[in-house]
Each structure stands twice: as structure tokens, then as C-alpha cells.
Length: 358
Image (cartoon, rainbow, N blue to C red; front, top):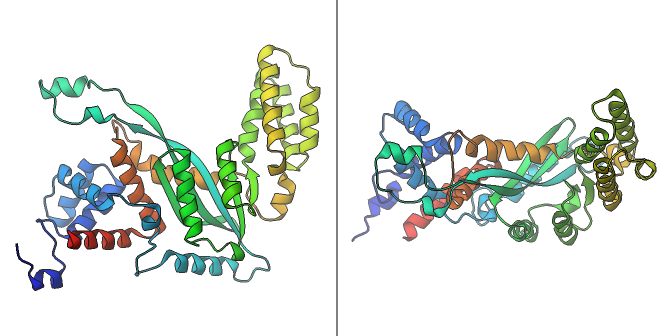
């Protein structure tokens, strides 16, 4: 085979679908289901591209994308650090103290199918569709998000979500830190999440100087369980929850723990709920100074990472009848992270270079 200079000058790649077509198709696929993306693509461009072809092209673009590639490091177009510095400067303008930069860590769930579901199966198509021989499984998508607090709104910086183990998530966070993506000297870093021990262990080792915040609304769930078990669905239950949450909101964690200690459980279920809540709050006592946190402008809830789970993971993956192979799921999540990180174009630069090298 030969190499034609005109091909390189025009940016042509092997195959009928060129990069501009692939990019347009991927943008649609990232937003909506393959069949719908195919119909929209044909309607908008007049070009017919099968849904299976769109599936193949999109997966090739996202193949082996790493956390730093989704954040555009190593590419010369728009380094993420410059974008982050610019957003920090905008939020800091006119303020007398450094802005709060939040790291939220949480998990969502995605519907997956086993690898054994691949390939064609014998029998009539209708029967195969009616009775799949495999069973789907919900897998946890662990992710993190860095964002700035700017008054009543948040300013997104970077996200990374994948079906992964806790060690893999920790490695991704470590890569972000070692790449010096987050200018910790210019912000007040805050880490907010639920009570999972493994999260706090990694946070302590990577961001030891960050302010650690236990999600206030996670504490609220524990207190509501106590109220339901102790008082049932009564006015007394509502009054007790509101009074206890107010003490917690004012940073009176010792008073809350003391009140739980003095409670006389009405049943074994209530006794267990009280013991669980007391152990949970006592373990995270140093992360519940909510009065000081509010005065410092820190958030009390993990709504930032919860919304990230929704618009990155749930919106695209949790569709009626959708069951994903794990590798395809992670590739789609990587592309959606690239979209919201503002690095979608850089991902295609990487794809073009890979095609040229091949």
C-alpha cells in the first residue's frame, strides 16, 4: 500500500466515514440511543450510517481512553490546567478569600450484561429477543468530580466515572494530583462524600490538607431511620428529627451523640438503628462541624457529585431496555466525561493520530 500526500493534506483516514463524519456521529451517540442517533444523523446530513457502524466507530474513538487523556493532558491544543486556572481566576475576582474547590466522590449504578451474551444465537429472532439466555447485573460506577463554589452556583472543572474498583479510582485521583492539575495553593480544597471508609483513606493519603466534610443529608437518612423505628409515622417522630437535625446543622455534634446515648429504645429495631447512627456520627465526628463549614462557605451536601452521576451516567446509560457490556459502558462514560470536561475535540485529535500511526 502507498501513502498519498494529498490524503494527509486533506486529513483523510481509511474507510468511507471520515473524521468529520465520525465526530458528528459520536456527538449524537453520546447524547442519545444508537437507533435514534442513526435517524437524526440521516435527517440532518442526508448520509446513511447504520446504528451498528455508529456503535463501532464510537467505540474505536473511546478505546483505552485514560483519565488524563479525557482531561486533555499530553495534547497541545488546550491544556486543562490553563482552563482550570482561568475558571479559578474568574470565580476569585473581587473576593477577599480563596475560592472553595470541592472534590466529590460517589457511586452510581449502570445496567450491564455478561460477555457471554455476545454473538448470534440459533433460533428465530423473535424468540431470541423474547427470552434472552443471560441475566443482567447492576454494576457500580465509581466516579469523582472537581468543581468550584461560586455563590449559589457551581462551576464544573473535571469528572471521571467508570465501572471500577476502589483501587482504580484511587489511581485515577493520584494521576490527577501528580499531573498538578489542581492548584491547591490557590483554592481551599474540600472533600465531601458519604461515610465509606475506603474513600476517606485515599483522601487522607492524597489530599491530607483538604477540609473533609461528611454529607449532611447522609446523616439525615440515619436520623430518619431512628425516628421511624422509635416513634413510627407520628408527629413526635417529625419533631424529634427536626430538633436533632437542627442541633447537627448548628455543629452541636456532642449534643446529638449525647441525646442518642440517652434514648430508651422502644424495640430491637429501634435499638439497632440508634446504635448504627451513634457509631456512624462518632466515627466521623471531625467531619460534622457544619456551623464552621457554613461560615467558611463550604458545602454541606454532595449534590455536586450526585448531579454529575445523573448527567454523565444516568441520562445516557439508564434507558429502557439498555444493558451494556462493561467495556462499552466505560467507553461511553469516558466520552461523556470528555464532553463535560470540554475535551471532546482533543479526544478526536488523539483518535486521528492513532489512525495515522496505524
